Image (cartoon, rainbow, N blue to C red; front, side):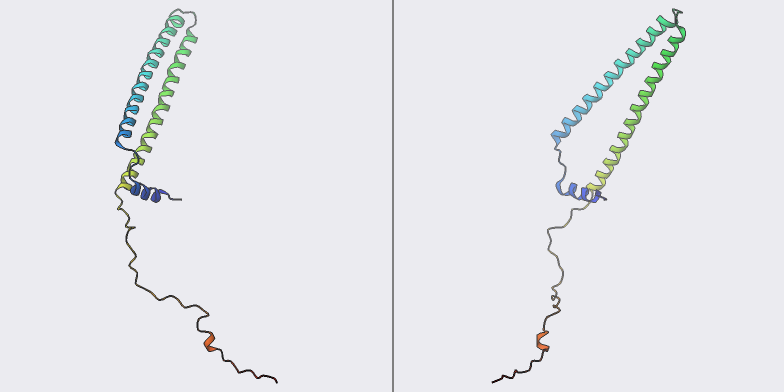
Length: 148
C-alpha cells in the first residue's frame, strides 16, 4: 500500500514524539540491559567451563566412562556454539533493520514541509452550463382555442 510517504508526511508535520528526557531514559535502560546481558553471558561461560571441567575430571580422567564424558563435553560445546550463532544472527538482523529505519527517518526528515496554508491561485472560471438551461425558450406555443 506504500504507506511510507504517508508516514513521512506525518513525521514531518508532527515532529519527534519523544522528547530528550525519554531518549535519555531509553539509552539508560538500553545500557543497563547490555550490562546485564553481558554479566549473564559471563556467568554462563564460567558455568559451562566448570561443567566441562567436572565432566573431564569425573568421567574421562577417572577412566570409567570415557565415551560418555567425551560425548557430553562435545554436546555442551556445540550447543553453546549454536546458541551463540543464533544470538549473533538475531543481533545482525536487528542492526540491519535499525540501520534501514534510521536511514528512512533521515530521508524523511529532509523532506520539505508542505505548503498547505496557501490559497489556490487558479483563475476564475465560468461554471459549466446545465443541459436543460435555455431549452424552454426554444419551445413554440400555440394559443389555445376555447370552446364555447
